Image (cartoon, rainbow, N blue to C red; front, side, top):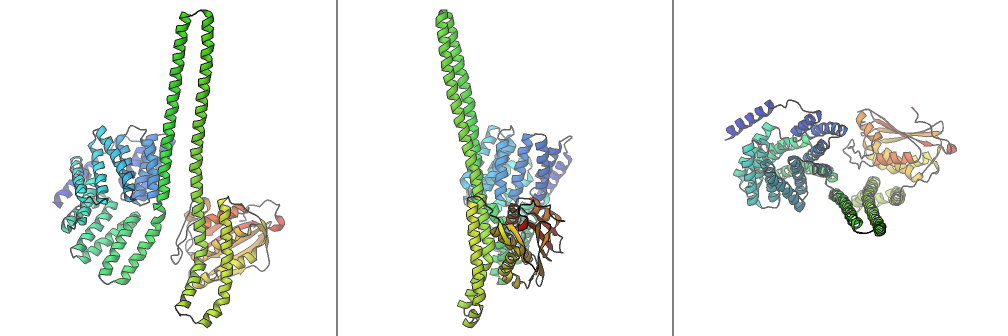
Length: 637
């Protein structure tokens, strides 16, 4: 059986390789290449689609613009980034609905259906599947119908309607066999393996899992291959083949890690931890659970259902705007009909009445026509006002969401460390790991840390209030070195944990013209980042020097450094960028973005010099207090 499947697949691959098109456009070639590799190498598919989208926009090819958005949606779905997958899916849907390409439109609908099914919104997924099935019935297209049956079987399996899921899987397999679609056949074999596993028919499930594994390895569907290894491992373990199950599960983890599929990485590591626990390998199980927590953290931003629902709402708002435009066209047609009717009546009256009566009628008609035009104009104004109000409301919602994200990220970034230290100290005392005398000896330092933490909290609360009403920068004369000392004192404990020395390279006061609260945020983030990316027993240099009419402040470490591309992303982009520290410390990615914003608001500039393995130096300028009315010079080289 497996040998016959192997021969069929080889023949299909040979036929596909020989069937080369005679002449295709660059956009068609790029999108074709992206479609071929998105299941195997989603990052490469994203790069190819980006090139294709630029060509489509340049040539004003609306259809291929929609195809590119669809490919973006599928590639991000493979990587389990449901937020971006949904965003690009709705973009593609808006364009493809206006084109005469039912096959591509159905693919877009089914892609959105799968995403919403995996997010647990089964009703929305069912709506999209039925829209696609309706397209297939209208155009008598078996390929569309087969794809709809495939996704319907997945939804039924999610709802635990296993017999119905098997029925639709078999229907789809029979249709795909007629067209020789080995990729979809392997997907449905994997589907049946999952269903039989849920029915506890492990040998049947294992047989279908191995069929899917064979086909996926031949056609290069790495996403399905990672899932197939997972299903094989489940069944082998259930049948008592523990060593084989663990080996297959490690294969699944490797493949899902290569393509960045966070969802299945989490499932595979969770299952492997269960295997280790059942075999009394607690330390290995704990390591796998740590990996699960890491990948769940990475998956968090891509599964913000609120943002996905917001995109869905925006999509529905745009649909309402299209309806409004149709109503405007209808009103224009009705106005034209009214005008034609009036003219026809006027013509009859001209033929029947005398000249005086004709003049009276024409005057009357003109009055009525003007009134109608005014009513139509008033209605158009009302429609435009409603449209603007909807757009303003959507923009306000996006703005409020960005402010909320910034606020919680800053509070987490600045207070997590001090509060954690305080909690650990109190925990040691309550558990009697520390004597009362030892606690008293540390009380002075504890009091000082609490005072600094309290000031930090007050600064954050003041800043958060300004965020809710718009950021306001209140500049005044500030002594920089005391701000640096206070920040270093706050972070001394963090640095001491890694035996890092915070070396201050200044010996005289420097006064600048800036906002004190914002300067504290800048210094805390930059010095904390230097500690985060430095090794144990390292030195961090903090320098403040005068240069013409500015104060140049620099923080230099000898940590892991950054590549040229990472530096360009940090300096030139407005997006969040997060990177794990030298000891795998996590960050929100907001710190440097806030630093850039506050430095710019205080009239300064930021610069980063770094190389991989040789450390990083972050520098920024602030106007000296005695030159507060002098324009800033360019950043010193």
